[in-house]
Length: 195
Image (cartoon, rainbow, N blue to C red; front, side, top):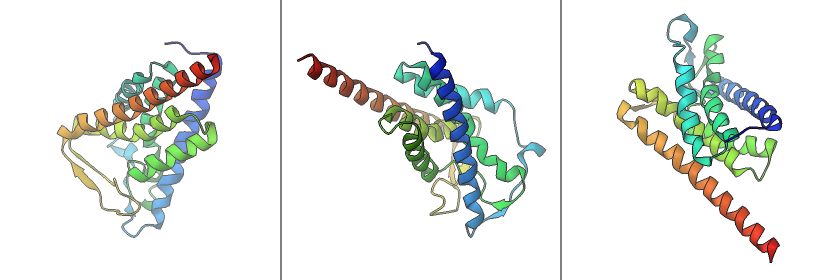
């Protein structure tokens, strides 16, 4: 696995954009009925160990692509899911952890692919799966609740910590299957050109 200067700049641009999507999506929660005044995570609930932990979980799942670019994106995206805490830091009324949802996973997949390459299916899979790896790490430390179906259903869904590996395995399967399909498609295209 190696990384070029072009890939390095791509990782920075894509990561910042992904974080921005998370922030914007979290602000959509101010429109929801079940919004509450959110607690600032910097006043006690934030743990610095979460940053390397989320990165490692995302990096591990995206490593199945055998491409350092996507492995690094998987790590950074998993960390940047927590950019939805900006609304909590500002202590605005909203729904906590809005980007920890299926809707955010799907929206981020579509927006990232439209913005950075319609045919970059692996990027889309990494964007979607980063929500799963993020939740997996959160559950690794303790049972937790997430607004998994927000904004359709605002009430958080509770998961016990034993579900941690199921979320990680699901992310690995999604990214791995996508990478295999892309590799096969590229291989078939090359063999057609040779003929």
